[in-house]
Amino acid sequence: MNTQDQPRRPKRSLLLSLLFILALLMSLCCMLLFAQLASSGGKQEWLAASMATKLRADYRPDEWGEMRRLAPLQAGVIEQTARDEDALSATPTTGLVPVAVAVVAITSTPFPLPSPTPVPVVTPQLSPTPQPSPTLQPTATSTPLSTPTPTTPPTPTPTTPPTPTSPPPTSTSPPPPPPPPPPTDTPTPTPTWPAPIVYSISPDNGDTKSTVSITNLAGENFQPGATARIDNGITSIDLTSVTVVSVNQITGTLDLSVAAGGPYNVQVTNPDLQSGLVTNTFTVTIPITYSYPTITPTCNISVTNCLSGTGAPDDNIAEIDPGGVIILDFGADNGIMDGQGYDFVLYEWDNAGAVYLDWIIIELSIDAITWYTTFYWGDGYTSMDDNTNIVSYSNDPSGPDPGEVDNEQIPLSNLYPYPGTGITIDINFLSDPPGAQYRYVRLSSPAGGDGDPSQIDSIERLH
Image (cartoon, rainbow, N blue to C red; front, side, top):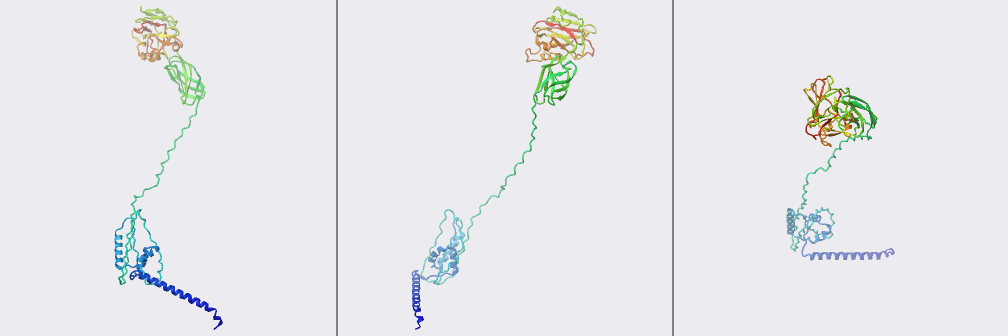
């Protein structure tokens, strides 16, 4: 023997021992396999490979052990299973998912089957309370069967839940914003002016029935557009053609054709309605163009002191009882005429700083036959007083002596020649031709009233 072969013998002996042990183990495994097949109670029915592949597609890998346990099936069982699946597919139940019965065919090859590639299965959403799927129990038999043609169960048609009907889409776009409001004009603030102040007026007088040009109404804070007027508390006369020369001067024109004689206040009003006033600054005068002529009075028995009613006013009065009459004759070519302003004056009695005008009627005549009433205090009609300087006292229903009352109290400041006791009268409403002279004047005391006599101091002819 070669000495080099001696060390290899132990290794060879060990390898033979391992092969022997491996053969014994394989023999033991074969016996266990046959014993398992014998305990199944009969012959196995082998399925076609296509059937096994179909069943593997319907089950998860962790369910293949159970699938192998159900392998020995008869052909009738497989056909019944297919019919049941058809019935289940034809009548879908809400919330149930069709489940195919998995059958595993075991081939005669003693080696394990290769692991199939898992096929992803889309599992539909189950309802909250799923119903259990019916499980078919296979029946094993020992009767040998010929190999049948494998039956492929129909593929279940997945049930797609109906798509809910949605209303037609509506526009979710927000409505366009409203147009911006038109811009408003911001008014320019009016500057604040102080109230006007009136100092004086020039000229400061004018004859009644005349037109006077005012050259300087002086003061402060006169605004453009200011107005001016004179006012005696009874009559108000506006300046016309007003010009605001400066903040200190106004010019204009005064029409005194309807102005009663006496003092007047002067007032200026700015466009912002603030006003300024100075009192008793302008005087309306009554021009006297005639002296007192010699008058011959004629009095009836109801007149006391008849001659005292003639001449200049001197507070010596004639008294006319109700029903009494005085007729004054001014003489030829010396009668009362219609001229500019008031035409004659009736003087009453100064009774402690005031006149208490009695009811009285004054009439004029050219020939002592036709008489024209020019003044009537006591008839209740203001139309006969509009041509006098006391018209406001016949239009004072809310005054201390409303209307034409007997013994009407009038302060001397409102009577000619301001102050005075004279009631001025204009005869421009008479219809006789211009230039007519009313030679005769008749004064009478109407009945009624307080019953006391009317007092006459004088009749003065102005024109």
